[in-house]
Image (cartoon, rainbow, N blue to C red; front, side):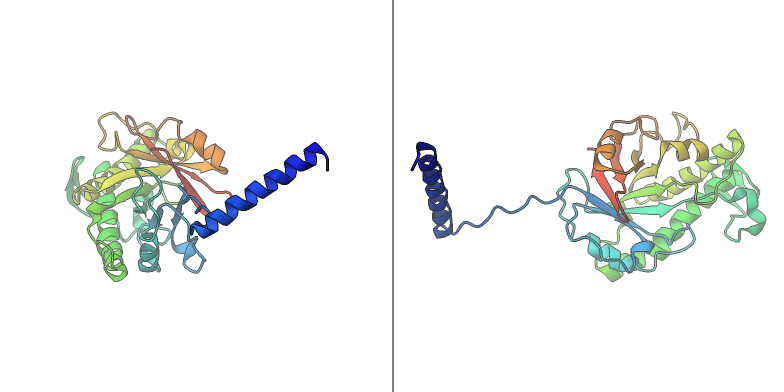
Amino acid sequence: MSTGTARRATRRVVVLLAAVAAVLAGAGPAAAAPTEVGVDISYPQCDADLPEDRAFAVVGVNGGIATLANPCLAEQLEWSQDSSGAASGQPVTQLYLNTANPGQMIELVTTWPAQGATPYGDCEGGNSAACSWRYGWERARSSVVRFFLPAAREAGIDPQPGQYVWWLDVETTNTWQGGTDDARARNLAALEGMTAYLDTWGAVVGVYSTHKQWRQIVGTVPADSPLAGRRSWLAGSVTADEAAVACVLPPLLPRGPVTLSQYVPDDLDLNRSCR
Protein backbone atom coordinates (compact mmCIF):
# COMPACT_ATOMS: atom_id res chain seq x y z
CA MET A 1 0.00 0.00 0.00
CA SER A 2 1.40 3.44 -0.91
CA THR A 3 1.53 6.37 1.52
CA GLY A 4 -1.24 8.19 -0.38
CA THR A 5 -3.46 5.13 -0.35
CA ALA A 6 -2.91 4.68 3.38
CA ARG A 7 -3.89 8.29 4.05
CA ARG A 8 -7.08 7.89 2.04
CA ALA A 9 -7.95 4.70 3.89
CA THR A 10 -7.41 6.41 7.23
CA ARG A 11 -9.68 9.26 6.23
CA ARG A 12 -12.44 6.80 5.23
CA VAL A 13 -12.19 5.12 8.64
CA VAL A 14 -12.44 8.45 10.45
CA VAL A 15 -15.51 9.45 8.42
CA LEU A 16 -17.14 6.07 9.05
CA LEU A 17 -16.50 6.25 12.79
CA ALA A 18 -17.96 9.77 12.91
CA ALA A 19 -21.11 8.59 11.12
CA VAL A 20 -21.51 5.66 13.51
CA ALA A 21 -21.07 7.97 16.51
CA ALA A 22 -23.76 10.30 15.17
CA VAL A 23 -26.24 7.45 14.78
CA LEU A 24 -25.51 6.14 18.27
CA ALA A 25 -26.02 9.63 19.66
CA GLY A 26 -29.41 9.84 17.96
CA ALA A 27 -28.32 12.55 15.52
CA GLY A 28 -29.90 12.55 12.08
CA PRO A 29 -29.05 14.52 8.96
CA ALA A 30 -29.21 18.31 9.41
CA ALA A 31 -32.63 19.72 8.59
CA ALA A 32 -32.79 21.95 5.54
CA ALA A 33 -33.20 25.62 6.37
CA PRO A 34 -36.72 26.86 5.63
CA THR A 35 -37.04 28.93 2.47
CA GLU A 36 -37.27 32.70 2.80
CA VAL A 37 -39.23 32.95 -0.46
CA GLY A 38 -42.87 34.03 -0.49
CA VAL A 39 -45.62 33.14 -2.94
CA ASP A 40 -48.51 35.23 -4.25
CA ILE A 41 -51.67 33.52 -5.46
CA SER A 42 -55.26 34.26 -6.39
CA TYR A 43 -58.14 32.86 -8.45
CA PRO A 44 -55.92 31.43 -11.26
CA GLN A 45 -54.45 29.04 -8.66
CA CYS A 46 -57.80 27.79 -7.34
CA ASP A 47 -57.18 24.29 -8.74
CA ALA A 48 -53.38 24.34 -8.59
CA ASP A 49 -51.08 22.38 -6.30
CA LEU A 50 -49.62 25.07 -4.05
CA PRO A 51 -46.07 24.79 -2.65
CA GLU A 52 -45.69 23.48 0.87
CA ASP A 53 -42.43 25.30 1.52
CA ARG A 54 -42.91 29.08 1.58
CA ALA A 55 -42.04 31.79 4.06
CA PHE A 56 -45.18 33.90 3.49
CA ALA A 57 -48.10 34.26 1.11
CA VAL A 58 -49.87 37.18 -0.52
CA VAL A 59 -53.45 36.23 -1.37
CA GLY A 60 -55.60 38.05 -3.92
CA VAL A 61 -59.02 38.96 -2.56
CA ASN A 62 -60.55 39.66 -5.97
CA GLY A 63 -61.28 37.55 -9.02
CA GLY A 64 -59.26 39.55 -11.53
CA ILE A 65 -61.28 42.78 -11.36
CA ALA A 66 -62.22 44.93 -8.38
CA THR A 67 -65.93 44.02 -8.47
CA LEU A 68 -65.48 40.23 -8.33
CA ALA A 69 -64.42 37.91 -5.51
CA ASN A 70 -61.72 35.26 -5.62
CA PRO A 71 -63.91 32.11 -5.55
CA CYS A 72 -61.42 30.08 -3.48
CA LEU A 73 -60.36 32.87 -1.14
CA ALA A 74 -61.20 30.98 2.07
CA GLU A 75 -59.16 27.94 1.07
CA GLN A 76 -56.18 30.07 0.06
CA LEU A 77 -56.32 32.09 3.28
CA GLU A 78 -56.29 28.88 5.30
CA TRP A 79 -53.30 27.62 3.27
CA SER A 80 -51.43 30.89 3.75
CA GLN A 81 -51.51 30.63 7.53
CA ASP A 82 -49.26 27.58 7.43
CA SER A 83 -46.39 29.57 5.92
CA SER A 84 -43.16 29.30 7.90
CA GLY A 85 -42.59 32.99 8.63
CA ALA A 86 -38.89 32.54 7.81
CA ALA A 87 -38.61 35.85 5.93
CA SER A 88 -37.75 38.55 8.44
CA GLY A 89 -40.31 41.36 8.61
CA GLN A 90 -42.86 39.63 6.36
CA PRO A 91 -46.19 38.57 7.93
CA VAL A 92 -47.16 35.04 6.90
CA THR A 93 -50.47 36.19 5.37
CA GLN A 94 -50.74 39.35 3.28
CA LEU A 95 -53.51 40.43 0.90
CA TYR A 96 -53.89 42.25 -2.38
CA LEU A 97 -56.76 44.01 -4.12
CA ASN A 98 -57.38 44.54 -7.82
CA THR A 99 -57.73 48.22 -8.64
CA ALA A 100 -59.13 50.30 -11.50
CA ASN A 101 -60.69 53.61 -12.50
CA PRO A 102 -63.28 53.29 -15.30
CA GLY A 103 -64.36 56.94 -15.10
CA GLN A 104 -63.91 57.55 -18.83
CA MET A 105 -66.68 55.02 -19.57
CA ILE A 106 -69.07 55.72 -16.71
CA GLU A 107 -72.10 55.19 -18.95
CA LEU A 108 -71.17 51.48 -18.91
CA VAL A 109 -70.25 51.24 -15.21
CA THR A 110 -73.06 50.33 -12.81
CA THR A 111 -70.79 50.71 -9.78
CA TRP A 112 -69.73 54.31 -10.47
CA PRO A 113 -70.70 56.52 -7.50
CA ALA A 114 -73.41 59.15 -7.84
CA GLN A 115 -72.59 61.15 -4.74
CA GLY A 116 -70.44 61.35 -1.63
CA ALA A 117 -68.07 63.68 0.20
CA THR A 118 -64.35 63.27 -0.48
CA PRO A 119 -61.08 65.17 0.11
CA TYR A 120 -61.51 66.42 -3.49
CA GLY A 121 -64.95 67.87 -2.77
CA ASP A 122 -68.37 66.36 -3.35
CA CYS A 123 -68.83 63.62 -5.93
CA GLU A 124 -71.79 64.48 -8.15
CA GLY A 125 -71.68 61.49 -10.47
CA GLY A 126 -69.33 62.75 -13.17
CA ASN A 127 -65.82 61.81 -14.19
CA SER A 128 -64.06 63.85 -11.54
CA ALA A 129 -61.28 63.39 -9.02
CA ALA A 130 -63.93 63.38 -6.29
CA CYS A 131 -65.93 60.55 -7.85
CA SER A 132 -62.72 58.66 -8.68
CA TRP A 133 -61.75 58.84 -4.99
CA ARG A 134 -65.25 57.69 -4.03
CA TYR A 135 -65.06 54.82 -6.51
CA GLY A 136 -61.81 53.63 -4.93
CA TRP A 137 -63.27 53.88 -1.42
CA GLU A 138 -66.35 51.86 -2.37
CA ARG A 139 -64.35 49.17 -4.21
CA ALA A 140 -62.10 48.70 -1.18
CA ARG A 141 -65.09 48.62 1.18
CA SER A 142 -66.86 46.04 -0.95
CA SER A 143 -63.73 43.88 -1.20
CA VAL A 144 -63.23 43.93 2.55
CA VAL A 145 -66.84 43.58 3.72
CA ARG A 146 -68.32 41.34 1.04
CA PHE A 147 -65.30 39.25 0.04
CA PHE A 148 -62.60 39.18 2.71
CA LEU A 149 -64.55 39.11 5.98
CA PRO A 150 -66.77 36.08 5.15
CA ALA A 151 -63.79 34.19 3.69
CA ALA A 152 -61.61 34.92 6.74
CA ARG A 153 -64.30 33.62 9.09
CA GLU A 154 -64.74 30.50 6.97
CA ALA A 155 -60.97 29.94 6.96
CA GLY A 156 -60.79 30.36 10.73
CA ILE A 157 -58.27 33.20 10.61
CA ASP A 158 -58.35 36.63 12.24
CA PRO A 159 -61.01 38.61 10.33
CA GLN A 160 -59.75 42.02 11.47
CA PRO A 161 -58.46 43.79 8.31
CA GLY A 162 -56.08 45.87 10.42
CA GLN A 163 -54.06 42.76 11.21
CA TYR A 164 -52.81 42.46 7.63
CA VAL A 165 -50.70 44.19 4.99
CA TRP A 166 -52.92 45.14 2.03
CA TRP A 167 -51.40 45.69 -1.42
CA LEU A 168 -53.09 47.64 -4.21
CA ASP A 169 -52.41 45.80 -7.48
CA VAL A 170 -51.91 48.49 -10.15
CA GLU A 171 -51.62 47.01 -13.66
CA THR A 172 -52.49 48.11 -17.19
CA THR A 173 -54.59 44.95 -17.66
CA ASN A 174 -57.32 46.61 -15.60
CA THR A 175 -59.41 49.60 -16.72
CA TRP A 176 -57.75 52.98 -16.18
CA GLN A 177 -58.18 56.49 -17.41
CA GLY A 178 -55.45 57.68 -19.69
CA GLY A 179 -54.15 60.24 -22.15
CA THR A 180 -53.63 63.26 -19.92
CA ASP A 181 -52.10 64.35 -16.64
CA ASP A 182 -55.62 65.00 -15.33
CA ALA A 183 -56.58 61.40 -16.13
CA ARG A 184 -53.57 60.10 -14.22
CA ALA A 185 -54.45 62.40 -11.33
CA ARG A 186 -57.93 60.85 -11.22
CA ASN A 187 -56.33 57.38 -11.17
CA LEU A 188 -54.25 58.48 -8.21
CA ALA A 189 -57.42 59.73 -6.51
CA ALA A 190 -59.00 56.28 -6.90
CA LEU A 191 -56.00 54.64 -5.23
CA GLU A 192 -56.10 57.25 -2.46
CA GLY A 193 -59.76 56.40 -1.89
CA MET A 194 -58.95 52.71 -1.53
CA THR A 195 -56.13 53.56 0.85
CA ALA A 196 -58.35 55.83 2.91
CA TYR A 197 -60.88 53.04 3.44
CA LEU A 198 -58.19 50.55 4.51
CA ASP A 199 -56.78 53.21 6.83
CA THR A 200 -60.09 53.22 8.73
CA TRP A 201 -59.24 49.65 9.80
CA GLY A 202 -55.69 50.56 10.76
CA ALA A 203 -54.28 48.36 7.99
CA VAL A 204 -50.81 48.69 6.47
CA VAL A 205 -51.19 49.64 2.79
CA GLY A 206 -48.71 49.41 -0.09
CA VAL A 207 -48.77 49.38 -3.89
CA TYR A 208 -47.73 46.70 -6.40
CA SER A 209 -46.65 47.53 -9.95
CA THR A 210 -43.75 47.89 -12.33
CA HIS A 211 -42.16 51.30 -12.79
CA LYS A 212 -43.32 51.40 -16.42
CA GLN A 213 -46.95 50.60 -15.63
CA TRP A 214 -46.96 52.95 -12.66
CA ARG A 215 -45.74 55.85 -14.81
CA GLN A 216 -48.42 55.10 -17.40
CA ILE A 217 -51.29 54.82 -14.93
CA VAL A 218 -50.37 57.28 -12.16
CA GLY A 219 -47.24 59.20 -13.09
CA THR A 220 -45.51 61.20 -10.37
CA VAL A 221 -47.07 61.04 -6.92
CA PRO A 222 -47.08 64.42 -5.12
CA ALA A 223 -45.16 64.54 -1.86
CA ASP A 224 -48.34 65.47 0.03
CA SER A 225 -50.41 62.57 -1.34
CA PRO A 226 -51.75 60.12 1.26
CA LEU A 227 -49.85 57.45 -0.71
CA ALA A 228 -46.46 59.06 -0.04
CA GLY A 229 -44.36 57.01 2.36
CA ARG A 230 -46.26 53.78 1.72
CA ARG A 231 -44.58 50.49 0.80
CA SER A 232 -43.69 49.38 -2.72
CA TRP A 233 -43.84 45.83 -4.08
CA LEU A 234 -41.94 45.76 -7.37
CA ALA A 235 -42.89 43.39 -10.19
CA GLY A 236 -41.10 42.59 -13.44
CA SER A 237 -38.23 40.28 -12.51
CA VAL A 238 -37.78 36.77 -13.90
CA THR A 239 -35.00 35.39 -11.72
CA ALA A 240 -34.12 35.55 -8.04
CA ASP A 241 -30.98 37.54 -8.90
CA GLU A 242 -33.04 40.12 -10.80
CA ALA A 243 -35.41 40.36 -7.84
CA ALA A 244 -32.47 41.04 -5.52
CA VAL A 245 -31.36 43.92 -7.77
CA ALA A 246 -34.92 45.28 -7.85
CA CYS A 247 -34.85 45.57 -4.06
CA VAL A 248 -32.48 48.54 -4.39
CA LEU A 249 -34.39 50.28 -7.20
CA PRO A 250 -36.29 53.50 -6.46
CA PRO A 251 -39.71 52.97 -4.83
CA LEU A 252 -42.98 53.67 -6.63
CA LEU A 253 -43.94 56.18 -3.95
CA PRO A 254 -41.96 59.09 -2.52
CA ARG A 255 -40.31 58.37 0.83
CA GLY A 256 -41.64 54.81 0.81
CA PRO A 257 -39.51 51.67 1.19
CA VAL A 258 -39.33 48.81 -1.30
CA THR A 259 -40.26 45.81 0.86
CA LEU A 260 -41.09 43.09 -1.70
CA SER A 261 -39.72 42.11 -5.10
CA GLN A 262 -41.59 39.64 -7.29
CA TYR A 263 -40.04 37.26 -9.80
CA VAL A 264 -41.74 34.70 -12.02
CA PRO A 265 -39.36 31.94 -13.13
CA ASP A 266 -42.20 29.68 -14.35
CA ASP A 267 -45.95 29.56 -13.66
CA LEU A 268 -45.73 30.53 -10.00
CA ASP A 269 -45.21 34.06 -8.66
CA LEU A 270 -42.36 34.11 -6.13
CA ASN A 271 -41.34 36.99 -3.91
CA ARG A 272 -38.18 38.10 -2.18
CA SER A 273 -38.27 40.14 0.99
CA CYS A 274 -36.36 43.42 0.65
CA ARG A 275 -36.45 44.25 4.36
